[in-house]
Length: 141
Image 1 (cartoon, rainbow, N blue to C red):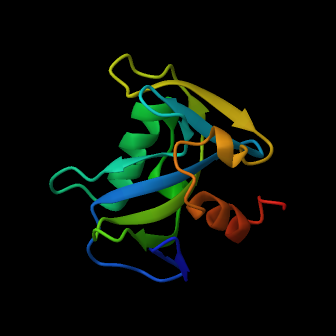
Image 2: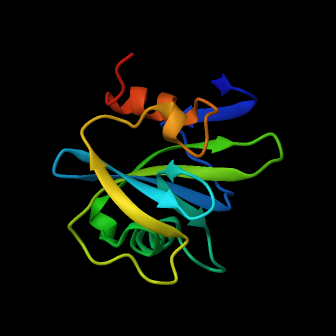
Image 3: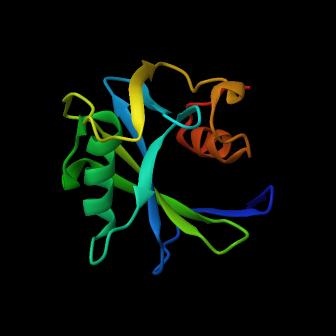
């Protein structure tokens, strides 16, 4: 599927990727974080050298939201490719518990919501989040 020039694929794998997006859930709630420079978004980030997808997801979930997740908590959903070739895997994970957001984080706070945030509150308004939430059955128009 193509959304605003972004190739989005669910239930298919990709071998080369440079970042991981993590849809975090906790006791039936979605987890959003407030980026210092942007607005509200899902957790995620770049893959460090020799890091696996799951290692990246675990690290980024903690660094951005204080969430503690394990490899067993992570489900692979798919991937997306931006027009510049930047490729991101999409995962979902249930949070075991939260710690404080680290002081070095690029986020300032987290919120838990029953429904996805309004797109006007999000850092990215390209339709990607909406499609992911539709896929997960969490988005109602």
